[in-house]
Amino acid sequence: MVRVNGPAMSLEASGSLAGAIVFSKWKGRPYVRELVKPANPKSGGQVGIRSMLRFLSQDWKNLSSADHTTWQAKAAAKVISQFNAFMGTNVYRYRDFLAPSQQDPATGAGTLSTLGTLAAVAGVRSITVTQPITTAADGWGVMFFRSLTSTFDGTYDKMKRIGKISGTAAVVFVDSPLSPGTYYYEVRSFTKQGQLGPASTEVNATVV
Image 1 (cartoon, helix red, strand yellow):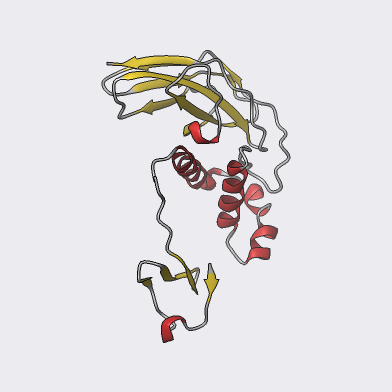
Image 2 (cartoon, helix red, strand yellow):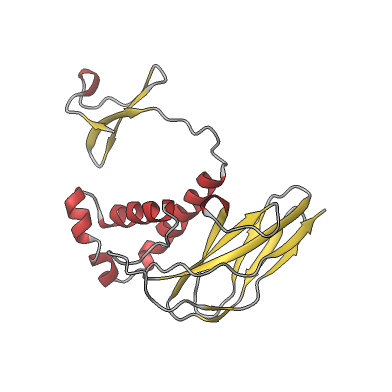
């Protein structure tokens, strides 16, 4: 992204040019960038990033004012909002397959939640995956991973959804729409301080 003072002879230029570059504004600052079109917007990596963005943006308002304040220094250094600092940093952490953190800097500490037995139940073009929570401790969320083959590793490109840990309420992921076949799932929980837990035991269900 390139910041400009007067793109295309105008301070208000916007839109694309020749399908190659884009003129726009971000936080009131004009810029020009290359027009990028994902080759596959439904790839594993794209789905995982969108899941992380959804989780972070929805839960920002639930963080304490003390948590918000920890992002001030990074926000000021980059001339962005605390929210954008929180979002950007945690998305980059996930790209390195690290858990997000409510505070900056992430310590990777905290006590992981105690998880019950993972279960998967097939429905009409869907599978409901339920993760019971025995003890919440410092747990913040649960990452759900899916594969079409058994004995898989829950990696960056296989994450499909993140559910928030709220006390001992079960965290549920309804995976749909699905084509007929057998799907395999495992989860990893993470703490508010950015510690990613180990993979759970794998479960599966079959959609007919």
